[in-house]
Image 1 (cartoon, rainbow, N blue to C red):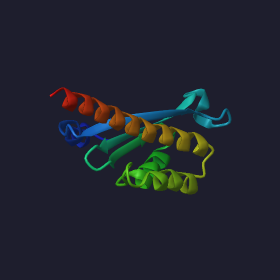
Image 2: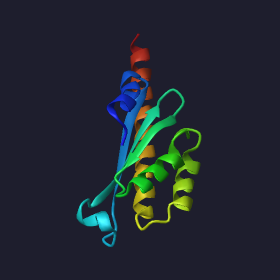
Image 3: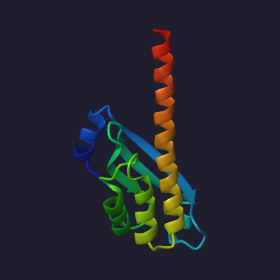
Image 4: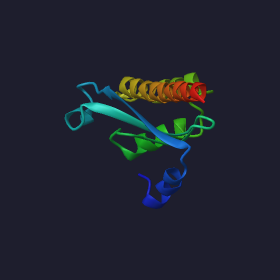
Length: 128
């Protein structure tokens, strides 16, 4: 988990947004009794789509750190297929399907928000 000092630069940059996605965990997974869903959260720089921070509700610190290493630094605009493929190929845990689904939902949330903001900008520009 990041310290408050580590999160401060993300909060101070208005160009970074937080997106999340969730997926149902398989019943056989140890964390299912605690969390029925697995979550993925990405901090994304909207200027270039780069993932500047990532987290997940995976149970162990190693799994969380491994996930971060797989996705941080990649672009949700240019590397979308690679991000999902990396996780599917490299994460072989029982939660892998839920992790990939939650990640895809995160990516979709980013693109929906960007599309919505573009439409709002276009409407406002048309009024001027």
